[in-house]
Amino acid sequence: MRVDKFLWCIRYFKTRSIATNACKQGKVRLEEEILKPSKDVFPGDKLRVRKNQINYEIEILDLPKSRVGAKLVNLYVHDITPKEAFEKLDLLKYSKDYYRKKGTGRPTKKDRRDIDDWFENASDDVTDKPEKKDE
Image (cartoon, rainbow, N blue to C red; front, side, top):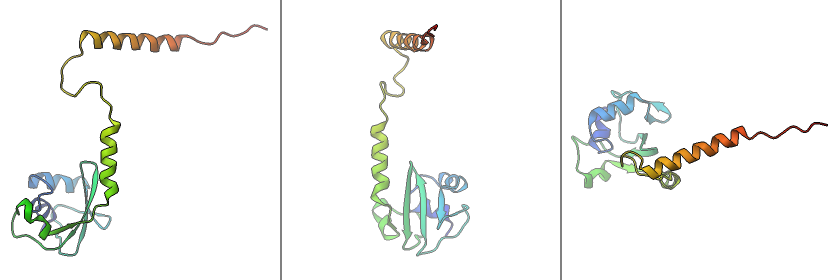
């Protein structure tokens, strides 16, 4: 079975074209070899799929005839992704400290004043140079 079709069948990607694009971008590997979308996969192969900043590692147990339900995915693949990969994703979420959520609109008047004050203070720091002592 083609690797792009397999990844779509086991619900790693929502559409087959997304799976194909992931293969073309080098996000799907078989033992460090970048796979083309048309490459055949077989039971026993171990794939590495990069998705959402996580390197998923899956072992193929069997090939499905068509797209399977979410509850049946475990019959066809065994997920051997290390737990550290998921912990890194959690750390990434916490490291992003945003003042405003994306898509909340233009800055308010107070936000604009704070931005202006910050730029004024930043430019003052640059212009304040240590004076040279004449000796």
